[in-house]
Length: 406
Image (cartoon, rainbow, N blue to C red; front, top):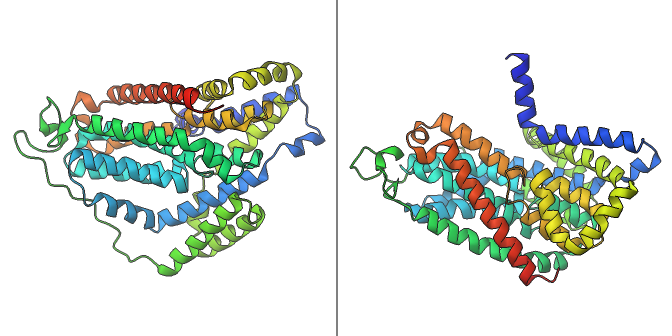
């Protein structure tokens, strides 16, 4: 591969890490390294995130999560029910295994299932709704979204307070997703969009679509011993998040156990995300020591914390927005809600959105059925994706402003 192309691939795949590293280096010019740098890093957040990602990889690699998803999907054949179970499965997985991991598991499965069922026209709306479901439904647990884990640890939030604040926007998100899924899936009947020829979805013109057939499940039986070990490791990771056990103990147990049971799960951890956190710890720590920036952001966060945090997420993504703005406010609730709601909106509001967009391009290369209609073109997908995200962002911000005492 030519050097220029390699650089281009590197930038596309790791643009946030590169931006975080550049921001950290630039901030070091303003605030030269000193002993205070040692206090910037929240190692508990990094350790807990490592544990959740590593154990999720272990479950994924043995096919456990895939089997659960396939079992849920196998019973459904209509457009509405199939779309609903795919979106719901993604939302539920995001609550336990982070939004990124949920999409990495469900998007490939969804594309295969929908194309195999003769419903390729459903792929764009389902992908867009799955990205929203992963971003917005992951808000209900401290480990569902990476920014939640950071803020939960940074502000020492109790589980009760966390759930009390996040339950209303979560309920509104679930209701909105259910309505949007029903409306969008209702446009596709008998394997084709209303007014379109079903042939674009893999069935020949005039024929009924192929009956739903889920892709073949893993043939090898699941190892009960490994399931038990991974279940215990996940429970340990959750206890570390809730500050019941030390984070270092959970990291040691997960690393040593997976080194013996499945080294690939360790190798496939998103270390780029962990490095991004470290870079933004340096950047935000230095920015907090700039008096002019503190004087500008502190009053804005005091008066408009929800809007500022959601707006910042639209520009720099919600994880760095959470890390940066946490240094300028003591009120965690508006910040927590804002960066979670801010996962909707622009394409960079959340890294999970970029995963969905990137995989849609890969799915079009893999499945010719996605290249046979204007409704499944990249432009049509991005328009739908953008409209849905904008609608959810505006609707949730209005809801939170009216309902939550922030």
